[in-house]
Length: 329
Image (cartoon, rainbow, N blue to C red; front, side, top):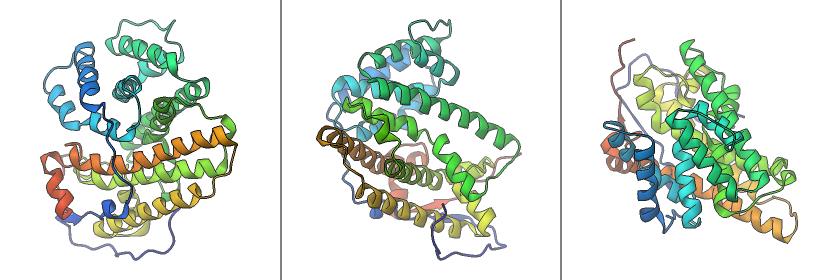
């Protein structure tokens, strides 16, 4: 749902040339932790991707600049080396859509001549060696939601469809990929939470709050590139259209929504019920993992070239984004 009354700025006739990011890092007081196995394990995972995926330039340079390993190491800081390696590999495999879900559902009988399919078959055979039954089933379901939502997003872009705010919030929770990445928290920690815990309304509210913060902050950080491509799958574009805000007003509003999502995360975390000593221990690990994802995503956004190119540290300091020119239609 949309947040309560927030100061807004009416739409202006003048075309902006820049905007200022909300200071989301200052609103996040969680410590950033990096997995101690990061350097050694990521080098192996990276080489596996390059070799098995037959990556060549400029794909290699783009991947290196993405710093995907840094994000994974910060999201799963307590994973052992084996499960961190698997988390690296699985995150990288999410781009192999059509092969990925089939290989995950049945890695033994799945057959293909495609390079991506062979990589996924190998990967998910390894995943199932240590993934619990609940964790594995949730992974398949979450991956399916992600791929379906991704296809719908492509269709929406082609038709220039813009969601209303309420439907966008629901849809964005699937396009973000967070639901699958949150299942990896269980996998990396070698826990397998009962379905009754994962389907509890308060646990779902905790997950939704974390997902919203990650998704909306990504929408803020990615807006400049997206507006240059005329992309409207963005919280900022939705707010400008639905609330009649100018760009800075929509950015500020989005920042306030992130702040409220953080508070929702804390409020619901505080009232989680008890399911007994052992399950409660696993729940605490899982919710800590959601916290790690929130803070890791914020820091990674400035470390990676994904949103700000080589200017991440400068943007982190002053928050000023110079708008890119729009590409020809």
